[in-house]
Length: 150
Image 1: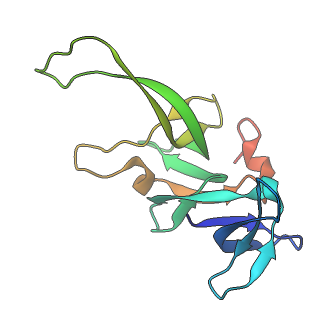
Image 2 (image 1 turned 120 degrees about the vertical axis):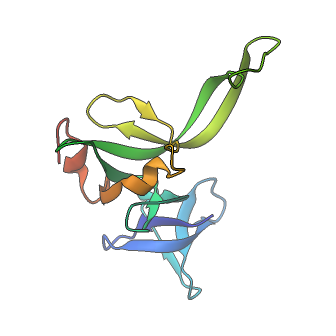
């Protein structure tokens, strides 16, 4: 799992997670050149495997902007969440009953309302995240989390 976090100098460090000795939480990051850098654990972010419109990888803790038709846009905070979803059969198929599944997945939480977006694809097969742009992260840009911020 690729990850990132802020070191004590406020610099974003990227690499692989490293646990502190005798600890259950991630205390540092091993960088690609083999260095170990301690991070502030509350700034830890996981790579989601989703790219934004510029091809930049999206991490938990990022804030993304999704343009809407016209001049509007929505801001989302990227997070990991466990959610329960009802699975419905595709059109033309029947089911023996409701089927609930528990997902441990990456979500996009709308800053204005708190509603949760699970990325989907449009009619052309383009993922929602490929229309978004990363505009900052909650650790270096906390003002983006203010209702109506950005």
